Amino acid sequence: MKQFNQYINGRFVNSTSTKMTEVLNPCTEEVLSSIPQGSVEDANNALDAAQNAHHAWKSLTAIERANYLNKMAIVIRENRVFLAETLAAEQAKVIGLAQVEIDVTADYFDYYAGFARRIEGEIIQSDRKKEHIFIHRAPIGVAVGILPWNFPFFVMARKVAASLITGNTCVIKPSCVAPNTVLEWVKLIQKIELPAGVLNFVCGSGPIVGNALSKSPITGIISLTGSVFAGQQVMQAASENITKVSLELGGKAPAIVCADANLELAVNAVVGSKIIFSGQVCNCAERLYVEDSIYDQFVEMVTKKMKEVKVEDAFSANNPDMSSLVSKDQLDKISEMVEYAKKEGAEVLVGGERSSKFDKGYFYQPTLLGNIKQDMQIIQEEVFGPVLPVMKFGSLDEAIALSNDCEFGLTSSIFSENFNKVMHASEELNFGEVYINREHFEAIQGFHAGWKKSGLGGADGKHGMEEYLQTKVVYAQYK
Image (cartoon, rainbow, N blue to C red):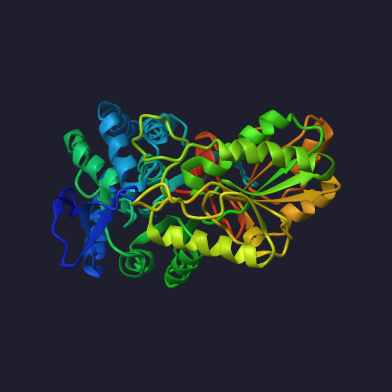
């Protein structure tokens, strides 16, 4: 069994806490590693290291900082299979999807390195003669990133790449559930000789390490990907110093299927958007609304597709569609939500229970639920698992109203061959992202940002980079 330490100021060091957390393989329940249950002192040491390294790091040219990001991408590609296998083992992500996450993460570092020559300010016309007004874009200082367990490696890059290219130094708190891939990569990048203190990794719980990082006066920005509750805790801690927060939180994405849709395309996209990583993705299709005239036909198609989903060990050579859930807590939560939906009157069309096929692991069957009403818990609360409730609608405006009847606002989708319908829906859906006739999955050059309780700020693209910059206005009067 591997044991990881904290990474602070350019080297691995023992935690000041002696307590450890075990990391399990969700498919086999085998212990893979142990990580420190870090302390407040660990968090403060990492912040001090990042603060001390900041001036020298921001003084480098952007292209010099970009060179380090390019080297990080090279290290990932050189070790892509090892990293994918590590990721699949610690979180039960099927090996094909794990490899995609690793490869896209390398692309992400290269993509943000390309912003080195595109961090721009402005020159504003003054009301005075012989004066220029310059708007400069400056780094915030020390950036803190708090990682989720569902895409731990990719989201690490989201926070690290944007922080470093803009001249910030960084402290990252990996997920306690899936930290191994991130920490193995930290070992591998030792050879690029990144200046000490620029990038630090501290393991530990949210209430202890996460809270200490969020409430410190050293921290300039906190970027968290996680639950609404975690986001609320970070905001509360950050309020002490009015620290900027960027939050990607929960989702309850609706998928609207109109009668004039390409039904084959729609069923593949909806089911694919539900079972990816066993439904444990914030932009997964979480609610399905189908026009009444095609409801029976489309539900029959979805039922057939869900029954064909292959569920196996993440490393299976049979190329499974999904595997185990990430933890027993996840399995218990999803089981309880489905059982409650049954009590409220939901009809199980496919699945609806834990898988009896496996002796070990946290496997749940792909599940489709009918006879659903809008006020049910299964429609209103995030499932974060392979469970899809389906309802019918009469008019497009009704479908939009049902979709918007939710406290979340991350992603949504509509399937229709009618241009006017899809444009109307894209205007009226109150979500940060709208997918038209395609699966739910964002691009690195877009802007992944939620409305309502799905978060503040966002990530990816130019606007994601700008999260890590602040403005300075210089009024230059001359003779």
